[in-house]
Length: 323
Image (cartoon, rainbow, N blue to C red; front, side, top):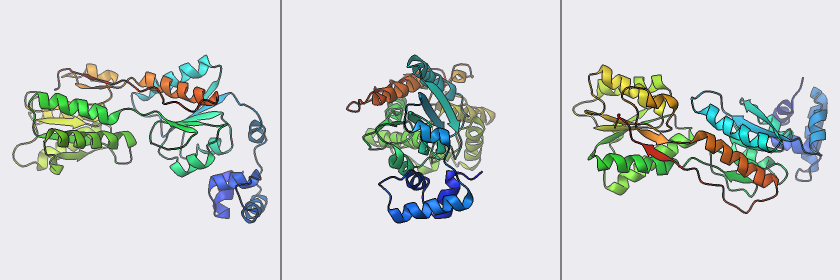
């Protein structure tokens, strides 16, 4: 069965332009509309009858668009969203795929919460409107119908740096995740800024790139120790708890004591962080509350309230045994 994406590809336009054309939007030129409709007829595309009906009335459905379902803290955030959705007598649809934006374009939902790096900024800003507002959790967008509900990542990094400096650490390394992660890069940038503000220099050779998993943290630290010459940092800050736990295992295998020789600090406060040995010092991010705030923000916009700032998400440093 032909899809809207197929029409867009064949016509050489974006998915949103194809949707606007088929729905006779005044934003699209007649020439483009004619081209898109011709392609739609040629490949046998038929607009979903349910979707067209939903454009004329409320669906009472909220969409939560994720990059994937992996990660130990994701369930808490989803639970927070679901709590508020149920309170408001709506249903929640959770999507995790590269093509899940089709539900946005074809108006299957009344509003959406976005935590999906596959969905491009341009698509979001082109289809959002007063009737279908969005809340984004993984980027900053300036649009009257989009609210940003973000983890205060740079503030968390500042807390960690201040904490380590108070313990007289002067050479501090960092384990970062993949550079496409908004949260991950914010944490790294916050770390760099905070070090600079304290007058400490960051040695780029002490930056380890991993991919947010425990094994990648383990492998990254193991490889780092194999090529390191001379002394290593007395502390490592990690972009999340999983990489921190992996890094601790690698350090212990190489006969480094944590925290006596090397302190290790995480970020997120996943459940496991309390039970590893040594227990992990980390930044506590209340993920369920994050989901609640995101959903509350969306429902305020659905009530046609746009002139407000979302409630800030509180974080705190949990001092345990690893640093």
